[in-house]
Image 1 (cartoon, rainbow, N blue to C red):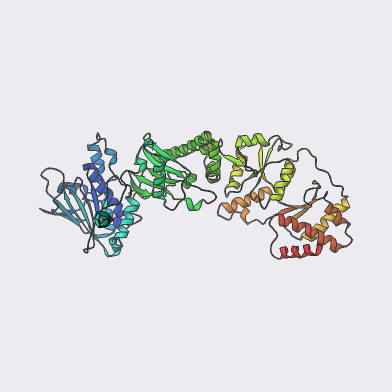
Image 2 (image 1 turned 180 degrees about the vertical axis):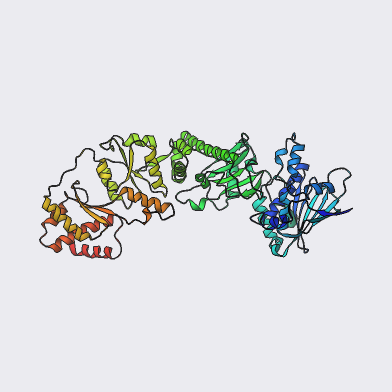
Length: 614
């Protein structure tokens, strides 16, 4: 038998497109061809194998599946974009294992020409009396069909690798691709042989003797745990699988097993890693599969942005893919899956909080950033997470949002009924302010994660009549001083003017405004605060990764002089201008030092001045 012809396509230019632009990565050819081999093998329920390459510079993908007749080659191979899997599923739509069919046996086959000068098929159909057939194509639209040489049922795809793709003739390169894309295919994939040590008797002293034995090298796990029911699995199974996926990572905190078949099909396992304050390096850790074939680890269209911090796998045949299977398309199924995953994660966290709050609180330092990220970016997640999101104070006590508002309403409510939350984003540097607030009976939260500036704004939007201020903000003390118990200073207008002049000269910084205030005598003589709103805008500009208008604005501070402090009286009573200036500078530098703002030459001057004063 011999037949020559032209592949049925709409344009002569389709092959250059297939060879160069159909797939974003030319290594994808191996995934497509192995997937097709698995497809054929699943239909016949037998073993498939891959892995012949020789000095002729060929790669052979071999299976013991259905095989094809010459007529089927014409139909399935010569008509580009014909879907063999679609017809098979229609023909066998009553079959229980129809969902096991992988992909489409159409354009995927032609990915072979991305790396090949010549592609050959040797095949023998399972049908009684079928003759072996051979198909050859050199990458043009011409093909040739002749009698084949295969003697057993199945198909060999023989790729004659072109000069530009000889990297794929390397065993390690092929095995890497198989490990990436085919690691969990549902049919055993053999690639070459591997050496094992086998007991071969004992020596005269009873010591075991070993010999090297060549065995088939099966490179995949055919039944990964996400294909099993949760009732079949133990914690060790989930942990072992996590170690297999991420061998260098810390163990996860907990996980969610996804398993839904309506209104879409979705299985998978999502792990909660230890996130802490590092978000970027955690991304792209969720792997997307379609019937156990790896597709991509960029799942932003399927998984909400804040859930990109999770690790694990998602497998769904209902996720639409473009012809290369490399990029996701946003359609109704994807949106439904997105919402479902969000709900499952939120419910899991809620169950953990309700069932064992102590254990949940112990994990908060690891999962807090993740939950805050979700609350900021997803309204539906916020509605659920508000019941188990925690606020932690400087005493390391944890409260839910509702619990905390109840705690501070009585003591930290302003004249107009606004409840004031005080927080520190650097407990060590702001310790003086924290202690000052504690002395007044105020509670101080610790909000020092990279997302907290955004989380604070979100809470102010959501919590009724609530204002959140950093403990060193220029308005914090005034807002919570609702009882007007501050001792008024006894400075005369002339003394106030004189004191302002002394500190203006001593400070000598255009971005710092001097104000004389009535504070408690046991407060610091000088306190440096910053505008809460402007500081927050600048912090947001930093965390957003770009330079906004606020990010370019200079820092401005208020220098509050405590009119009731005894040092102020000492400054006013000093007999020389030099002494007044020296004391004012010392008081101001102490305020800078408490804020971590005293550096360089100014710090050296402060040290030298301190020695002189001593």
